[in-house]
Every structure is written in C-alpha cells, then in structure tokens.
Image 1 (cartoon, one colour):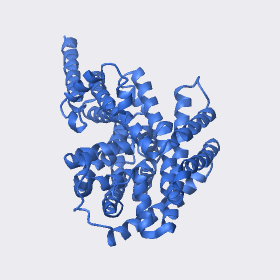
Image 2 (image 1 turned 180 degrees about the vertical axis):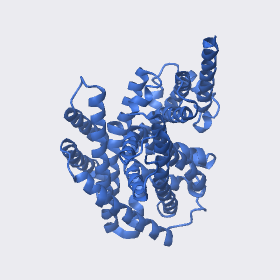
Image 3 (image 1 turned 135 degrees about the vertical axis):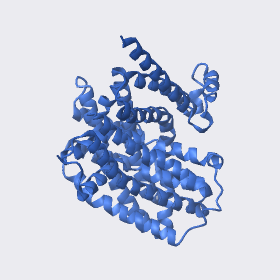
Image 4 (image 1 turned 90 degrees about the horizontal axis):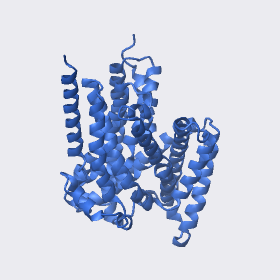
Length: 451
C-alpha cells in the first residue's frame, strides 16, 4: 500500500492548495498592514501569518484527520442545525457577501481607478464590475478550459510580475521602514492586530470549505490511511504556505516602504496601485491591473461555481445550480459597487464571529485525532466560543447599527469584561471553559455507564 507521495506529486498538491486559498485578500491586506504597522511590521507579520498561513494548513489537516467528506459533514459533529447554519454562513461570507465582490473591487482599484478622474470613479466601477460579472456568469454557466488556462498561464505571469515589483522595491526602496512609527492599534498591540488582520484573508474559511477537494486529490494519488493523508497534506501544505508567507513578508515590507512617499492609503488596493505606478509608471499599473484582474476573475468563477454547487446540493428543493449562479453573480455585482473600503468594513463583524468558531472546530478536530470523537467536547466548546464571539461581532458593527440594538451598552460592558477582550481575543477563555465543561460531562457519562 502506498504510504507517501512522490516529489512531483507534492508539488502538484502544493500548487493546488496555493490556487485554492490565494486570492485578492492575500494581496491587499499585507500591503496595507505594512503601511500602518511601519517599524512594528515584524510582530504584526507573525500574527498575520498565524491566521493567514498556519491555521488554513491546520484546517485542511483537520479535515483529513477526521475523514470528513465536506464542511457540512464536519460540522455535523456538533449539531445538525449548527451544521446547516454555519455552512451556509461560511459559504455566503467567502461567496457573494464579501469575497466574490472583493475580487472585482480589487481589480478595479488597482488596474482601472488610478487612470480615471475623480468624478467618473463611480461610473467606472459600475461599468467595470458589470463586465467583470458578465464574464464570471458566462463561464460559471459554461465550464470550459478557461480556468485551467488562467491558472497555468496568468497566475504564474502574475507571480512573475509581482516578484519583479518586489525585488525592484527592495533594491531601490522608497524609504526606511524602521523609522515609520506604527499607527492605530499597531502602536501597542502589533502582534494581535496582525493576528486579527489575518481574518480578512478568509483563508481559514476557504480551507474548511475547500479542504476536502485537496484531500480527495491526495486520495486519488493513492493514499487512504488518515495518518498518511494528514502527513502528505501537511508536507504539501508546508511548501505552499511557505511561499505564501514569503509573499506576505515581501508585501508587508514594500507596503511599509511606500508610506514614506504616499503616507497612509485608504486600503491595500490603493497601496499596490501606488507602488506599481511609482516603479513602472502607467505601464506598470496597467500590467499589474491586467494580471490581478485575470487572477481575481479565476477566483470569482471558482467561488461562484463552488457556492452554487454547495447550495444546490445543500438545499436540493430550493433552486437549481444555474439559478444560484445567476443570483450570486447579480448579488455580487450589486455589493461590489459599494466600494472596496466599505466591503472590508462590513465584512469585519461577520469575520469576527465566524473565525473563532472555525478555529474552535479545527482545534476540536485535532483533539479528536488524539482522543477520538466525543460530542460533548464539540457542543460545549462551540457554545462557549459562539457566545463570546457574538460580543466581538457586536463591537465590530458600525456605530449607527450598534445604537439600534436594545441594551447595547450592557452588552458592550459584558463583552469588554471578558479576559483578552481588549486585544480581540475575548473568545479564547470561554472556549476553553466550554471544552472543560465538555470534558467533565464526558467523564460523568463514563462514570455513570460503569457498572
């Protein structure tokens, strides 16, 4: 029986993982973080890599350890209702609510916006996103070789151009990184701010949603035992995530440099556009815009396809795949026209709620690999995590929405009283408390069943 993959098979799996999780957010957020963190970029980067690199790898390993067929199957370990609600919320988040619209707005922000006058920006965004999602819908309804062509040709082309841009920026820096003082929460909590900034990549959510695709690919290469699958997943993932971490390091460093010339930009899309224009002028901006647009187009088509397939299978009596593809494309088009900065702002509350739950599920799966499956551990931990994460969700809501919630001041006080709440980690202690309660219930069940 085959126990390990060959070298070329590891490379194949690693490239597949990179293609699954690397998208628009992986570009814009490290660059923006570098600008804001300045001289504190290293601890911020370490935190960012934990949630943006390490946790996605553990998420895929968790799926392989538990031999789960899908995210829904994985979440059934907690409860059927939770499984459906969490699966729907996760796919909507990485789909039409945030991730799909973001692919279009990042493409526009980097490749088109710098060449338009201020008074035609809104019209330009509308026309660009209209064309963008028309193409997305066309290929989502008619699967073809375009995704393979884009993946094999345009993604390497993009990485080549990005590498040239980064090397140029390192050899001829715009300014000194370490003299730039950190701003905002990076001033006192650079590590934890970077940790939370990693939420924006949505890579942990993507890993849970698409991890079974990777595991099934490894199975098709001849492995079957959970331990062998986990080992090969981790080894392949290490190559892929090492490349991602290297890209994050470079983007953070170059983003921090750009502050000396451009100050603080509104978002990471503006940062990348300014860097490209600084070194290569209009030609550089156009080339970067085209390659990012093609890469984001591939991501958007894949996400529309995945979300439409998931919902048509999850809710078979609702709508067919083509109807879901049309609805998700139209909805994403509408959301994309609110602008990149607003999409990022509105996504944060949802991410602050979903991410702790996703992290808890991953941790429970890893625990299951050691002690076996025990439902009380899952249920109690998720209750503790979800209850505390609701306070983080509330805290991240826009002030106008917060003021509409009854007893909001009392809820704020309760949320702020949680340990580690000041650094956005208020869910950790309740999660551990839930795990402890689950362990006690499990112990009691075993004692009661003992003759």
